[in-house]
Image (cartoon, rainbow, N blue to C red; front, top):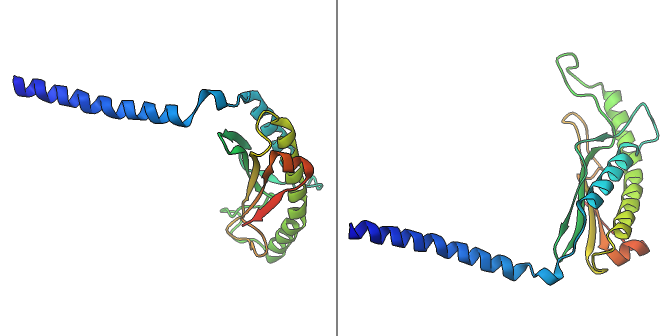
Length: 185
């Protein structure tokens, strides 16, 4: 009886200690006086705007871009605002039981269109980064605004000369001045 009571007491003590440690760590890393309040609707509005901008990136109605999922934004405490999207610069046919092979001419045309649209994407991303900087006025000027777009390619097509991801970032103040850092991977 004493052994089981001692075991129960030790188990309770062991369980309580990590809970106290977790609470202490959380309180130490998130001081209440430094929290920036950003309304969730602010993110939703920009996400929808960016989705619309990326979906209408191409001037050709018959060869649209393909937005793969919704743009997502979040605020990282002490770092800044980050938005991400995934996009195919041109909607492409997929291999299927009815289409076993993509004709060489079509593959070349798709690649050419992608190369033509990359500058359009970069221009749109600069505009979007500026919109982020002007929207999130409640974050400090020295925090980052970051926009990353991952590019999708079908298995049959060449991605030669094309990036897998385009990322643009700047401090909030620099983004408003057009001083943007572009990283292509």
